[in-house]
Image (cartoon, rainbow, N blue to C red):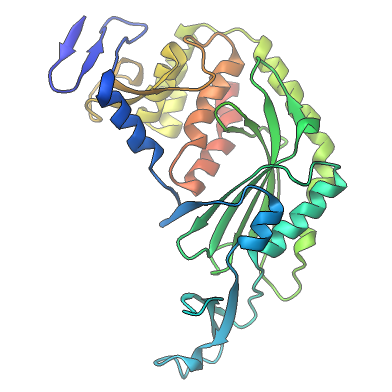
Length: 338
């Protein structure tokens, strides 16, 4: 066992498993910093909103209005565009959009989401987690669908959630999708039957139409339950995981993410890096532990364990869009290990 001075890293250089520890106040400071990192949507930082139910969110989410650009100095000749403004005393401009752009309030989307829950006979007071950009122009809302859509492959419940996104700044369409979230760590799982619906902000847009495709496809989530059970029964060996992480995971997600996959799969701990430019395969990198991964075993033994490792890394990316891309790649990565 060697100690690298100044970094607080203990590690065993012999494969297959690195052993290391960051202890005491240093570990607590590192984890506190990580917990305070904001999520981003593109270049926009996102911030938690205090509303915990749909009704509270509908009542408290920010609202917006539009105004012709000619009302503002320097924009007199731009007759085909309008400003989107916060509906507050300050009337802060958040975007300039086409006159044909239909402004759909976040609360309108969530009211339609509530109708979706009612149709599925889900609790209308289900827990909601909301993130907003600084002026509220972008929203990510995550809504639990309740016990009816809960499974338990390994002793840690996994529950179906409705994920809703909306922008009022012309930065994207309205979107709704179904995700399985592992409640102990809020890992998000998508499989080949992942469902998403989207609508543009056009004059013909009716927010309730966003959820109709999901109603038609909700039964297909049974296939995903079958996938979880199959993954939980499939045993894996760590040498196969090492080759897979050093190969296809590294080429798809990069060497640092691949090193995190290997470390979590073999120790249950997420890690940072003593030297990001270390010239060794991902599974042999010198690492600094950051935190135990909730629900992760000390050593992954099933395909489901490894799926959760991938999901942890994809679900906790600080960039929302990048995290969505990575989640879409999880099943194809697992197929290369399966």
